[in-house]
Length: 91
Length: 453
Figure 1: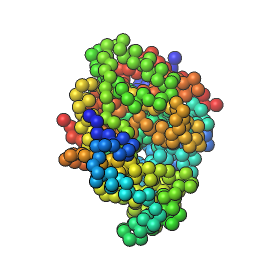
Figure 2 (figure 1 turned 90 degrees about the horizontal axis):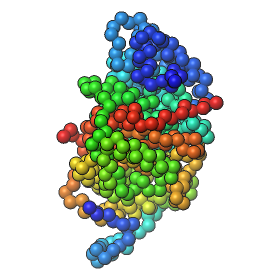
Figure 3 (figure 1 turned 180 degrees about the horizontal axis):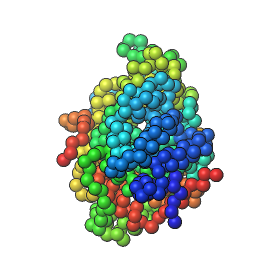
Figure 4 (figure 1 turned 45 degrees about the horizontal axis):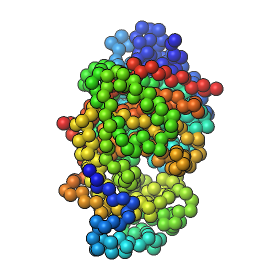
C-alpha cells in the first residue's frame, strides 16, 4: 500500500489547482503567530518565544517550518472515511 | 553463581523472603543504604518515604497471612505516579507542592500485591523527552558508563534498577520512555497493550499515547508485575518457540543502526530459527511521517493538560518544555484530528500484518546510550537529535498501541548493553511475555553487572 506523499515534492499526480495552492503556501512569519496569540484564545507566550518558533536561534525548537511542511504533505493524503483513533478493543 | 542481593530478580527475592532467608525489613534497609550511597551518582530518586516502607516491611514480616505475589518486594515509581501523602512533581518546579491525596490505580494494585514503595524516580520534566535530562534534579547516568545517558523519560527508574536501588520500577511510555531506557541500561522494559493498565492517578503527557509500563531485571519479573497490575491474569509460563512466526521488518527498523547492534540481533535471529521459529520478512506501514503524526498528537494534548498551570506558574517550566507547548498552540485542530486518523490507519495496517505473524522483532534502539549532553548522534554519517534516535524504533508502537517488550541481547564493544524489541498483537500481552520468558531462559546470553565504581 503506497499512500506516501514524498517530501512534499509536487508530482504530476497533483492537479493544477493543487500545484497553485502549494505554491501559494508562504513561509510562516512572526506576525501570524502573534496574531494567533493575541486574537485567538491562547496563553500569552512571550514575544521571544514566538520569535524562536519562526526563526530558531537557541536550538530549543528546530524545524517548526519543516513540521508545517510535513503537515501540509499529510493534508494531501486522502484518508477516505478513516475515523480518528480511539480505544483499542479486545477482539 | 548467585547474584548480589541488590541485583537479584523479584522471583529470587520472593523465594528468599518466603523461606525466611531474609526479612522484608532487611531488604528495605539494604536498598536504603545503597540509595544513600549512590544518591549523588545515580540521581535516581526525587523523593523517598523510607519510614513508611520500613513500617510496611515490619508488618509483612510479622504477618501470618499467606504471602501475596509481591509481599515485601521494594519498588520505585516515576515521579508522575500519585502516592498518597507524597508530592508528585513530574520532575518540575511547577508542581513542588502537589501532594497526592490518593494512590494511583497502579500503586493501589502494587499495594494489594504486597509490594512496598521506596520512593519516586527522577525523569525528563513531565516526560517531555527521551534523554532524561533534568535541569532541576540532574541527569540520571547510565550504570554501565556514568558519562552516558540512562535514557528517558523514565531515566531515574532505569538508573534505580541499574544501580541496584530497588527490585523493580513503574514508568510511563509515550514514545519508548520505559523500553528505551531499559534497553540502554541492560534491563527489561515492558509496555502493555494501550489502555490495559490504568493510567488513573498518573500525570498525563499525551492521553492518546501514554502507557504505564514496567522496568525489571528479567522477563519473568515483567510477567510477575503484569499479573499484579492486572489481577485476574492467568499464569504466564514460557512459550514454545517452535512454529512461532516472527515478523522481521524489511525497512526502517534495521536502517541507520549501529553495526554491533545489528550483529547482536542477527545472532538472536539465528537462535530463534534454531529453536523452531519461522522468521518472516514483512513490510511495515511507511514510517516517513510517523514522528510528525506523533508530535502533532502529543503536543496539543500536553498543552491542553498544562493550561491549568500556565497562567499562574508558566514561568516555572523549563525553557524547552515551554517551547514545545508554544509550538502546540500554533497547530490547527484539523491537523490534530488528521494525525489521529493516521494513527487509526497505522493500526489497521498493523492488524493486517499481525494476521500473518505472531510477533515482530526489531532492535530496541539504533544506538547505544549517547553521552550526557550530546545534542545529536550520528549513524552511517547521518546526524539525528539524540532523543529522536533513542526512540526511533519504539515510538510507532505507542501510536498503534501494541504490547512491546525490550530485552538485553548483547554487549557493545563500548561496554554498553544492546537490546532487542518484541512486539505482540493487541491484548496478547501474556503470549508476548511468555515468548520473552522463553527467549530469556533459552538464549545463551548473560549481561554482566555494571561496575559501579
